[in-house]
Length: 142
Image (cartoon, rainbow, N blue to C red; front, side, top):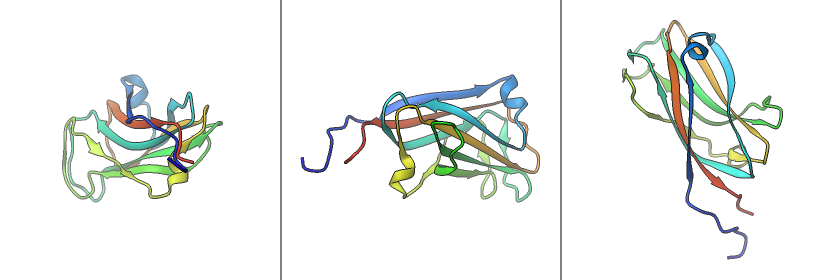
């Protein structure tokens, strides 16, 4: 097993931003959604925006990005991202799988690092909540 630490299957972690917090988000907002208790690696991510639907539009859509915020929550390395509503209509409560970065170092969180959600809106959308899941593996490969 040279070079690898034994690792378990990904642990699913759910997160949510609902109600008043979501409706008060600005067109560009970054919020903490997870703080790593141990060194870990984000291996997958999904996202649901709780609105009636996002119609295909070149003028009304949003981008969701997960950032490695570091210990202060100020980091900007993109772990995963998805553009929602620009290429196709997204039905209400549909899970969108985020595209993971190929840069392994960005996906690794140290104990105490924050995972940030960055919401960037183009045009006008009215979110009433955000829900998602992460696949996190504790420990890192050597």
